[in-house]
Image 1 (cartoon, rainbow, N blue to C red):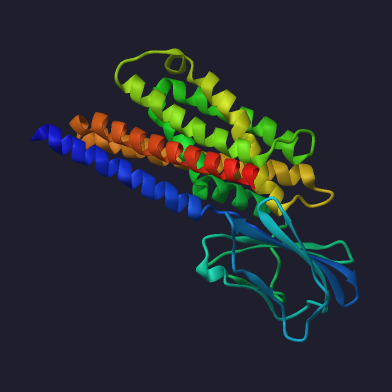
Image 2 (image 1 turned 90 degrees about the vertical axis):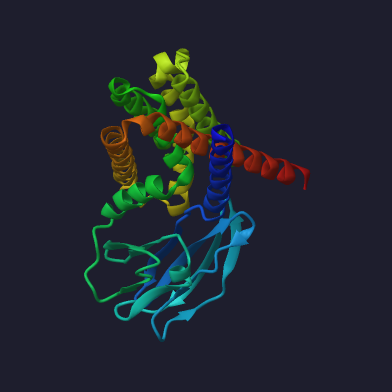
Amino acid sequence: MLARLRIRIAASLLLLAAVLAGAASAHEVRPGYLELKQSGPASFAVTWKQPILGERILRLRPVFPEGCTAGAETAEQVGVALIRRFDLACPLRSGEIRIEGLERSLTDVFLRIERLDGSIAAHVLRPASPAIDLAAPAGAPLAAYVRIGIEHILFGWDHLLFVAGIVLLVRPRQLLATVTAFTLAHSITLSLATLGHVSLPSAPVEITIALSIMLVALEALRRGEGVENLSARFPWLIAFGFGLIHGFGFAGALSEIGLPDGARAWALLLFNVGVEIGQLLLIAGLLLAVYLVRTLKPERLAPVLRAGAYVVGTAGAYWTIERTFALLQAAAS
């Protein structure tokens, strides 16, 4: 009877992980980007990067103040975004800019307005606040990159689950060195890729990231069974190796937004700071949960950790299969 119950619980966990992986894959957070660069006293050159999820273009549309007139539009698909460019006849001094459809999505839109006098205004529009008042004071242009970095780690399921897998794998005394290795590695490749020194195709990178999630969960399960292999003794080595690949994933998200001219290094640094803040918040939350279980129900700790590793590993396996199949389909078409 107990064995059947365990089988049912395991099957339920695997099914839950598959459902979550499918939902996360279908609703992966990809930010939009709307850039308005002033070209005359009452005219702006507009670049609108509209996110694409799989084969579906998110139904988002920028809406400008009454009286603004848009010119002829060009459109091209670049990576996972549809880029539309057009001219806008409008002074953009009053009224509001709104992203229609954003309130029904799970993504954000980064808005950047650059005027002829050199001033730059930056805003992050969200489902809960899809519009900005042009007459209101603008936020700090670069500070928005910190917030985007935090959101990318907290709402990017693949990176979030990899960090969770690391917490499941390592012992407390190893956690600092392991997280530092992961941070150092993804910072290196994020910087190199974003500044244009190195590039890798996105599809193999995404597949490798999914594999890293599955493998780190597998190693966590083996360690829970008492197997002390290389990853258990030197988890920082595993974290550093896979961190190099995750850095290319971070760079892909940042490239969809772009870096401001004249402040690329600062924006990159602040984005990376945001990623680290998000990562530390996640780790703190997981450690608190482990502490509470250990304190209140110590006999449940091992089953909870094992169940967590199964969920993380199944999600990684699902993404590996899904992304590999998508790559093969694209190669065949």
